[in-house]
Length: 253
Image (cartoon, rainbow, N blue to C red; front, side, top):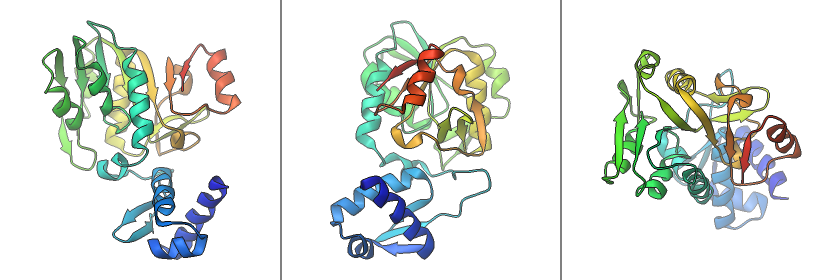
């Protein structure tokens, strides 16, 4: 019932372009708290965004989901993302050289590895700020131009820079993914960074909550078959479970 309501609500918002929260409650016969939870889920889908007092539809670019700001992504599915980060942190061992991606699905890892002596490579200002608080963590910040919308640094020459570094494990976020399109991102700059990191890393861990399944953005930075582990918050469909088993991809949920 909830899934059906979400689909109908999304279509209702797209048709009306902008809708007040009170209108959604009246039209769908739900409480304010339920409406807010539904909107959190819809924002993560990438076709609407919250505004003061309600919600509005986004203009979807050709190629798939748009690039949302860090703030828009940060408040969605927080508990699920925290669970994913905790499970991902269990793969970090003392002495590891790891990459932590700029997505909101990965920054929480710092809280769970703060007492593990390791080296973090990142292009995320948020990751760097949190990691800087913990003395046992060494940190390498990738160079580049600061992009305020994603709170990350982007450099088209990053592949050359990363070629001199040995990354044991990369913990990657994604705008959306599927077995067909792989791991995707809506920003060309982030796409180039992520693709370079994937190429430079020995193991790839995908951190993605349930809303990222079967969604796509414009750029594919990694094939799904190339990842070593998928860490998510719910059991995926049988298609994903079977695929992971067949391709020796560790599945954690």
